[in-house]
Length: 383
Image 1 (cartoon, rainbow, N blue to C red):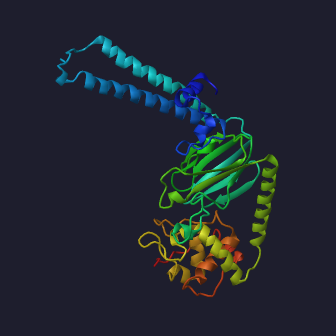
Image 2: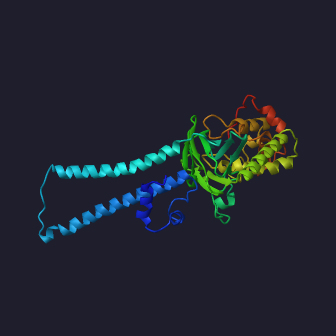
Image 3: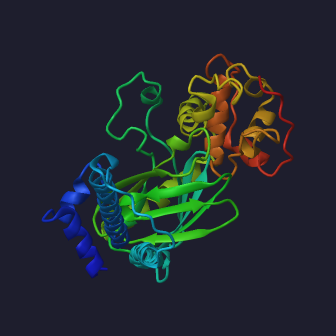
């Protein structure tokens, strides 16, 4: 879309400044790496230039009139009413300005919504508070959660350059491929937003919304959930890694290998120490946001697990809550479709043996497999 209006926007705004210089400016948008993102970038510059022009003309006229026609200089105010010429001028000029802005904006929106002929399709599901990715063409599925250590969030460790913008499993796509995104949500409204690729799409429970991008530069691009989705809305970063076709194929093979290894773990029997060690990692990635790393929860909102009736009560009920969620009306969601049998066994064992919960028992993957689909046990009242 190298149309005249784009060139005029850049020339008028920055003179001889280059486009890359604009993109690199710290207070501007992220440097675009897709055609749609570039169009959004140019449109943003055009609209800003128009707004600045209107601001200058209006305020310059106003201040000139105030000074030139002030009463102290002896100026006499003109009296006119229902002046046809004035009515036409202040109707036609805004109309021309609005049409001039609406035309390029409509072209960009139409381009953004054209999701036809994709090279690959990725379904993105928003959860409280993580992202799920399903690669429909390659059979890859994983969850992506915040990777910033809790010590940094709690202010007990130095923050790194990507504080709250790093994840454990980034989305990986090949460079130069048209990627169609199917965006939805599992619980509340989320919004998948990565400015560098020009995508901001709401994920609404019960609906599928689509978007697309084709990144033309290898690199790592970061975004965030752009919808106020709950307590940890700010803890839902998005990382997109654009790699070569060969690297993408290698990544797909690695993901499938990891899935097979996870499936194999479901048939194993682990020692309690092994489950506790693995369970701590699962807890930090999936549970610590609500129940806190020290298991003390958030009083009045999320119950403590340290010393709770859930973590020190019957293990079957504990497994049922992790699988299917808490009592109706609570924020506790089930993890039956998000974690494997081995991961649920590990996190249950960790919660029952961490902090002051010295239960000394353990759940095995076989216990979780048996509990799946069973009648949900009544959840004991949380402490």
